[in-house]
Image (cartoon, rainbow, N blue to C red; front, side, top):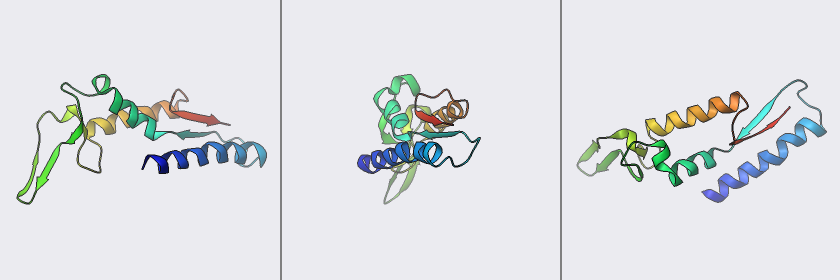
Length: 113
């Protein structure tokens, strides 16, 4: 998965300025490409900065087996809701990072105008 994400990021990193600068398309528009993988990687590598204690980046809130599902307590300490979806806490971190992109204040984005 990491390879697919970095490939897509590389394509946008080079295609966006090409479209904006070389073709002079979209006059007056501003563009930002956000590296979402790096946001999640930062949470994963520094969970104590983002998640409630004890931070957990490997388990899921929603624990399911053949008998059904149960949700673990302390949900703000988890990075993942289930094997596919981020937790509400992680979603709020992503939302904050998106607001930073809109304000052109994000270290996770490249900007072109």
